[in-house]
Length: 373
Ligand code: DLL
Image (cartoon, rainbow, N blue to C red; front, side):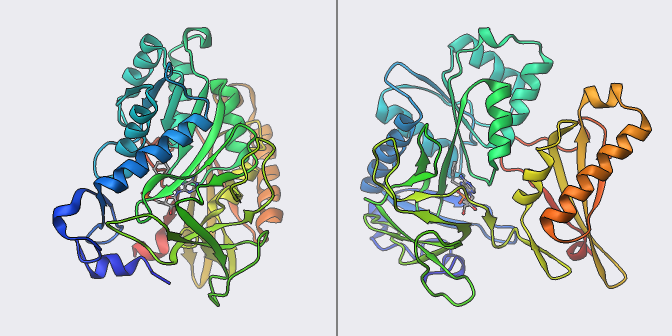
């Protein structure tokens, strides 16, 4: 296996497999501690990347007449430039909005007739909220599909985004170490992400033993690049938890399908010995009509006991109509639902609308106070 640490150990360019003259671009992902992880591309790598991103956008329905607003961050992050060159390769119009300045994003969407929005699902949710607040009628927008990725999101979040934005919300997967966005992409049938096996070989392993698992079993995704030049990877351990399905999709594609990523092994929190993924919490919260999909998990320690508190915003409508007794009923119903889904007792706190931070990029939903001390 190749582990993430190897790139850090050979920071910045030590793992490049070609002479430096052949490298034409670098990207980097911000590590939580210290130096970032740096990745490099030859001209050939950038060609393949643009092709694969064009393929991914085509799966979302983009054509040469589409307008694609790229609201992933431009810069060292692979999201912005990665998607951007795919849009140009396809021949659609790229709107390099980058992340942030939300009212302006919405103005561009309306004025340019944006058909496809590419950003993180948490930013899409924030955009949806601001569109509603600005009172913009949906008929003034030409949005058809969203190409959402870079962080885990659940099918419940998909339903929420699809109904609020009235679009088809599709999942795109990728990681800097392998390329960036465009390693796997969902088609409108939404039965898993088609893994671009002509360039990347996926495997699922048991993260504890390293043993390869058969199709259909849940484990850590491991990827080998087949065509990368500057930074080839052999059996790279992504730390993402997923399942692969070999049956062809009803869209006709035969590429193996990656089930929606459950989360990262490093995002998994262990509370009193039980493994909890933020996505499991999201699934439960989004079933409740009275709360908004803005939430965070706060982990703390009382004495020797770990406590998980889930904070979730109530909707404006709930706040205006529900009495205190009713709010308490909502809270305890959500708590019961979380307790039984997660298998541990959690504390639930309902908070006022707009009190949980919004994000323009990847959401940070877990606050671990145990490590902050
Ligand atoms: O997030 C590349 C990307 C950009 C993908 C835009 C999709 C769209 P990194 O910053 O290196 O690269 O982070 C990679 O993000 O290992 C996963 O844990 C997570 N991730 C990426 N896409 C998804 C997804 C980009 N669709 C890490 N679902 C990966 C769940 C995702 N997690």
